[in-house]
Length: 221
Length: 205
Image 1 (cartoon, rainbow over the protein chains, first blue to last red):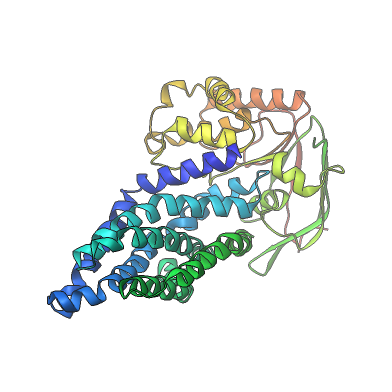
Image 2 (cartoon, helix red, strand yellow):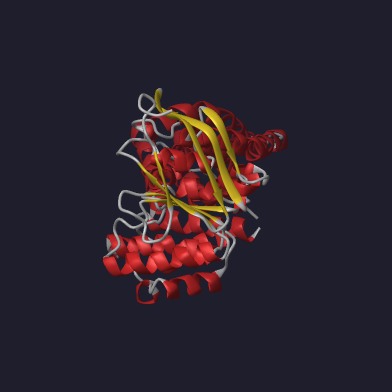
């Protein structure tokens, strides 16, 4: 367990070390959320209607940004070799890297999500729910994203390939999360969608590391 | 745990090209073997295959009855050109992380830093180290977490003459404690070691 936590600490530190990576994601998020009203028009009524959905899609896109380096850097500099020579199964190592990604990038983005939604005109009462959705959705984004990052190891322009692999896997959380937010705003029951979002995230926390480890082994050999 | 390393009729290929076949070696506790061969002959690939990072085409790699998965999980160190050290982290952070990851702790990392005279460098970022200092940091991992089998890929190349000699003494100590060393080299090792030359499939066995 101490190995797992030191790796988690290292991953988080590395994410913050590489040019303030998480802040870049948050900045990108703010940028996308600001661009949308410019394209759609500034009428508050129209903006308020799309605010939760827009904040949610922008969050998914911002989560993509730092994914491509998740395994690539360790693969190139040999750290992945050394990480495999340990009693820690590679699956758990991959899980630690994704949890690190979530702590470093997912959590700051989740904190920014209510701000973006409210700036676009969503009511204040949405804050706790969008924060919860962004935290859980961020977990799903990190673990599905890890699969794409591991599969594109060694490919040229791996970052773009990661995005293409990962975006289809992002669809269910985008649908569930967007559905939860709009159901809440129109006073409809939203718990079912929220539970589905949690189930999707947990399924990938459990299954994602198996795919990632297989992809890493394949890339190393 | 690992008392011996046996290669029996190992064949390796890379990118569809057969590098060598029929390679056999038996290494016991306290023994070292220098792998030689031309550039591209497959020395690094063989070390990676022993570490389980590359698949072998034919033959067997054995660790004297120890399950290969256990042997690779805690019985061997691989030290090569790709040292996995992050340029933006300090030498201390990196050494302590790899020490814990390989089964040591902060105290054993400090001991290893002492042995390789890294103490004055520990607060520097890895990017500020010279090639030789960086190699010493990578080699400190071998001492920070004791493991019986050392797989070394050109361990001496960036080191100066004095450090080559001192690392030779460290290898000697490791062997005296029952360790095993398989090292890919171009220059002779500074210790008594057998030599195994890798030759291509058209020339060899």
